[in-house]
Length: 234
Ligand SMILES: [Zn+2]
Image 1 (cartoon, protein in one colour):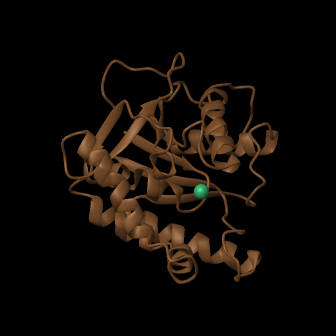
Image 2 (spheres, rainbow, N blue to C red):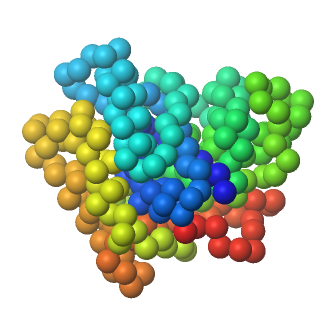
């Protein structure tokens, strides 16, 4: 299978489903990680133009740690709009180019607007990718890829319906999160937040709910014709 994560910022997929993506890759599946926003406003000291470049490198390193390939839509932070024709065409092209069999994205409700808009874009583009007269570089796809929503930040207002045991991938996941040094170091030094511990705690809690050491939780986008009878998560 080809698995496509569509996240908002360069570190969101690592946080929400990095263990699951690593497990897919370990199972021989091709994994792409696409971030829509370039993360250029995610720091209080580093200027946006420089931060954009730093975060692109961090995303590539994190994807490599998980066995995935990094892709970017390169929209500025706080500028992600699901109604934007151009950005929707670019997300559509990513789905076509990758030939995604499964998509993982944000939940439709999360703690900030860009995440929610990214979720809507992924869902919309999973449909528009099939429309031949919506022309992008790659040809339209024949199938409607199923879409899964990953956990919200800190799991707030999110009740998973499916779990993935990532006990064997938790350290690799944390390694990928720590590749986002501009974020992890900043949070530790200036906000006194141990973000790696934050992520580990969330996955331990999901593990507690699903009888394993560490887990990631998901919900499926239940819209025709994206549903399948078989389990698609690893
Ligand atoms: Zn984010």
